[in-house]
Amino acid sequence: MHTPLINAARALAQACIVTLALVHGAHAAPATEESLRRYFEIAKSERMIDTAIEAMLEIEAREWQDESDPKKKANLKARFERTSAIIRKQIAWNKVEPAAIESYQKHLQESDVQDLLVQAQSPLGQMIINKVTPALLKQPPVVAVHLAKRIEELRERKEGSVPPPVVLPQPPAGSKEALALALMLDWPGARDDFNKNMADIETRGLEMAAAFDGEATAGIGEEVRRFSKAIRNEIKFEEMAAIEARMIAGELNETEMAALIEEHKNPARAAQRIKIAQADAELMTRMSAAMQSGDVLKQLADAGSEEAPATPAKAARAPAKK
Image (cartoon, rainbow, N blue to C red):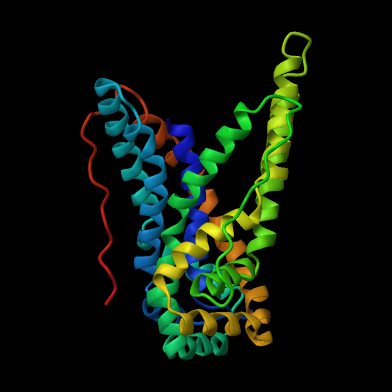
């Protein structure tokens, strides 16, 4: 089990970055530690990261929750609790914040952070912090359920069969749901990120298929190739956007969604988003390296072992900054 959790841990590191980046964008060059700490405090970054961690662990918890055998279920649950305690500890805010400060100092000027502080305290900024980002962080488990169902459908389909069309519900024109769908379809960078992720999945699948190209296993390789290509070509961004839109429509009103759409069209904000990507990449590198360190991987491997203690020690939690 520890391998999926290691992968989840890497995804959590990305979720941390998204949490910091979603609230607002920025520029490039040194900023003071004090102003960055103040910004992260106003943006409630610690709370957002905690929420992101729990959302991702909710997905991982389904392995033991879906197990019908009582003994296996108990073992899987105990193992999940051990590994999730490690993940919570390794991606706690007290570890993320120093990496975030160092990363952002490489790309933000002090004037940029002062700009962000003003934006974060504006009515729109507060709406993003208190409503939009929490709503976005609720989406991964729901999207994961849909993806699992779609992937199972692709896996069971016979080779050469014609895929059924994906029918998306079309909300009535001018409705709140239609506005939410427009918001999610045009969310800055979302489509490009989705396409990149799907291409990466296909690439990994094709690399895996190459390992089965021997005479005895050639059929397996072909099946893996078919499956990988089907995932990329048939699972569409619009599917994800429709799911996310239904959730957003339940959290935001029409005025709030319209304000976000206008914010996304703002050229100055678009320029900020491009520049903040530099800081995001720096932070991602740091977080990924931390989660893939020998010590953390060993902890996860040990926690995933059947010989590990049944009751995990609770992860220490850093006190919230005042």
